[in-house]
Image (cartoon, rainbow, N blue to C red):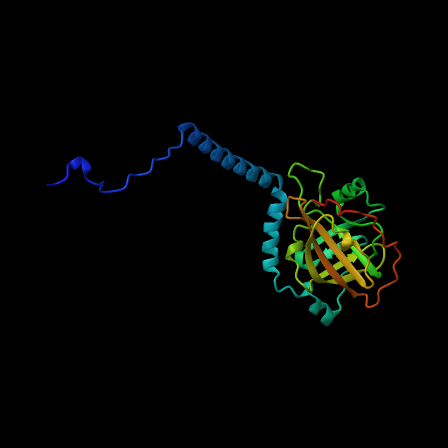
Length: 251
């Protein structure tokens, strides 16, 4: 005798219960995703607008560097062959690779108010650091970006191109004395608390730094150069002490 249909075993195991997300939770999740997307878009637009001059400067600089990639006068090898020293006006910085020329403002102290005021009209030589051509470390800082609405800044993106410098590129600088030349030997990205870059060296070096990435004060981009001209460095006339516990905000 065949078993009753009601006693037959099931052909498949029962399916687990289906979990459903309440409609209210789904709407909330969609709203959150849209809010984050709008916030990110608005932030990107505001950041680009605020830093428009510096971003354009970087684009223009990239084109300049491409056009001058084989520019011999920008390199140490060219100087060794020719020993051509540029004729700079007093208190001027010149970086051939970047086609950069900027006034050097000499700081009497390293207070934030002093440095920010001087940065309106050029790059700054930090008080206490060596002077160009002397034994020790010449420390010069400059802006990498400025706000589009800040019309006071005449050199607001003067150091935006520092990351493009290559080993062996020349840096020329003059304060009140003779012209001094340096060749790039190293790059670094450091935290704002890393004041070791300000330390005075036993040789003759130059340190250039600026805030990095462009539009932020998160880090500092640092270029270090070694003296190539004059052949013998003069004794230092400075204290060698910058008395800073953190790197200035050179946005």
